[in-house]
Length: 202
Image (cartoon, rainbow, N blue to C red; front, side):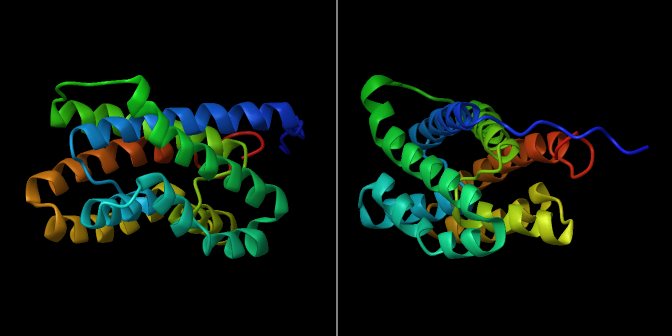
């Protein structure tokens, strides 16, 4: 039986999704940074560069995403690219702004990994459902799901493992182990809640 067509999101709904999704991710990233937990994806690459160089995290994250907009434009279309650009810009700003609003004196590493991973996963899920992402490797994961049918959560997990291998060398084994836990929580959210063909309009 053919499912009934679904109504597209209104522009204001996409704007709200960008704000909500980026905010959830930003809070998760704040937990990671407070507990010194490296992350996967382009966020993780930017974090490792920030950790090694001391340069501004938000600026690095924004810059590292620039090359992937070409893939997004060609493979996913103008609307996806523009919403992704807005999401990346919003997260870049929030990542530098939230530490001024929220001050955490102590953070348990396991709690930060699990809750931070769940927050980031739900933020990404909101963005994916509105055909947006946080750029970089996330664009590649969504692109492969749309074109090859590969599950975005699985693709993202494999790429994260490569990044976390680098984190083990740069930051240390304990932090990398917490990153694996965070990555598992993040990708569990996406893998369970975003499967092609399971939901109307997805």
